[in-house]
Length: 305
Length: 240
Ligand code: SF4
Ligand code: SF4
Image (cartoon, rainbow over all chains, first blue to last red; front, side, top):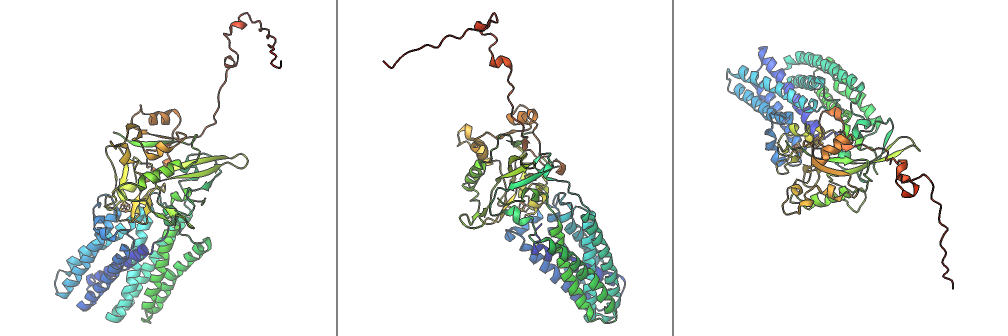
């Protein structure tokens, strides 16, 4: 598939936002001694990230002015469910910030509801991809697990960097949590990489045109200058590029942040760098996630002519 | 229940692209607005088509066969493109099984095209909506057209009669009979989409000839098995 930057930004930004929220709420549940402003500014950061993600998603649409229609088919479509879950999560975070602002006792309850919304959003985002059966690379529970683990990892790394400025006493514990989550995300992502490396395509040239001969070559795809089908479903990069992006994202999104988080426990200034590196790594990770998915329609679009 | 569909005879398709051209002509002239063409007379021409004819080569040279393969939306009975659509713009009609896109509702998220395994939905870069074969829903019920022309454009255009249009749920229809008598098959059955369109396989064309067809067994001259004696050729001299 061709990686669309709008969707790459959407999924990485809201993942970090959801992760950060879960860390903030866990902090509250643990009765940490922090000022209300810690939660309020944190919520503002969450809203900023998810707002930017939402904005990015509009660039994916041919008719952004009709985006409201996308909430209609929540009974059948995971995309529709995601479209509802994202604003709902943002509303929850807003309510959470307001409750802290007012010093209300309802923060725990609102936070609980928002936690459910955050997890729902993770499931919806993952299912948008996992529900497409013909894309075998995505159609696996690992997709949802990884969206969740990666979101929580980047959110926790962000929390540790955020705490440097707002609640320095929490940086060490956040950094340790971020290390654990980043490690878990690394395990989950590696499992998906291993799984996908062994995938055997269910659909072949033979079943695509219904001829049971071992050697079938396309001579013409019926168009000389390409079509939507040649643009949307191919990443258009060389094999060498694909091979190099995999180690690159593994280092940037997982190994380097793990190291920086570890050093960051004693040298907190590194934590912000850890988050930025991890975020860049996750952009590459998401790019690869799309590029790796090989759509069966590509069988019909192999030869220009 | 009716399920309209096309049955495409790969044995007679010659790859002339008439169906492609007539499809484009009809669908670019309709009420839904033109199907975009970018750089039509330039380098890298590209545009929206509902139907394409592809060509495959089966076997190793010199034992190869060329196979022309028209491909458009198969109007699946279990269309994966429909439930994923967040707006309800993609839908399957109950009355005749045609899968359509409501261009006024489509937000152009392209999600449906990801769910379809066949690569037959094409995003229109000018109208910014998803488009696909409509089975000429604006022809087949069109009372302004003469009865004989109430068929999809591609079917009318095909010079070899490789495209059969009909209700594949009616066992008496020409389409159903072609499928059952000539081994019609669906594409990518493993995807579980149950395509309504079917393809008729290529086969070796042979003509069995019995000896009675060469020698008339009831030839009165051969009644007693005595070969007729050839008559000497008649001569006529026109030179004088
Ligand atoms: S061929 Fe593709 S677009 Fe057409 S109904 Fe089937 S899944 Fe949908
Ligand atoms: S591109 Fe249009 S028809 Fe396709 S899923 Fe999106 S809204 Fe539905």
